[in-house]
Length: 123
Image (tube, rainbow, N blue to C red; front, top):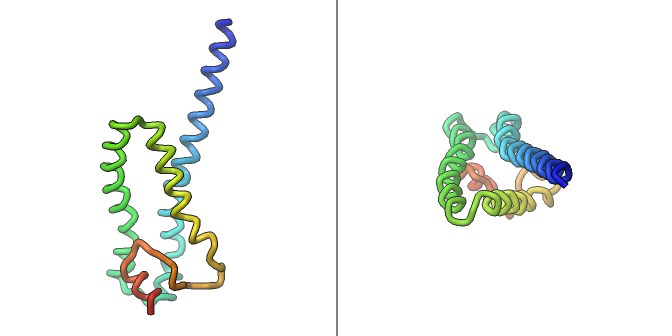
């Protein structure tokens, strides 16, 4: 009986580590994608260095703000439900980008963390 219990605990530990790794990988993906595409975005939308800085730093500002909010929510409702809800929200927020055609540089329904990029999409 004790051996079965230890195996279950080890299995749950592996599951937690794998899920945590996937969440961390998702969190870094948006920052990395922005950095990789920065030069092409700057050319496509004629962004100057200041606007590129706003675009690049918008992710860090978002992480700073929502980390504080997430900490408060995690204290109130628990870490596990907070991480699950945040991951689900991230997935839902990425969905509109998945539906856009790959060849379209911009569309009216596109949203962006960078105000300069959003203004260019509306015109």
